[in-house]
Image (cartoon, rainbow, N blue to C red; front, side, top):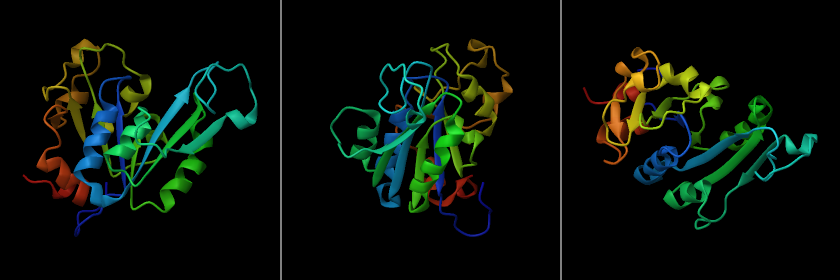
Length: 211
């Protein structure tokens, strides 16, 4: 996290979650809409498994180097994709990075290239935490959904806050994970929109949040 002295302008925020379709992009949209003036560059990073091409996300039997990593800019606000939603929510620029499972490191030069000229960067990804340390990391959890990605569990202790559908603290027993991973984290509701406290964190850094 940034130091405590003076106002801190957030540079990198990561939004992750324990599985698919639990509200990660919803949280990303909330952040973008609430802080449009921060001129975010938003990125969604996807790692595809065997048999799915990183160049276009479709089934693929190829195994060539040019399909290992792809980063494309989203230019449509109404295509219905997650990246289109980010652009419509107010991001200045939006990118979709795709790579094969386990090869995110190879994609990072292309990702960092897009971050260099960004005032602030918002990334939707868990695994990127292995390769960078953001100013804020928000984890989206829903204990009604049992799947828990290893990457999400690996970095859960680094979360600055947890977001759940209702704002209730998730039940760690549902996933048979250590209760301490969620017991000591502030919890916020996806349904309620961003609280003033979270907006302060985004603007000034977490140390500047109200008591």
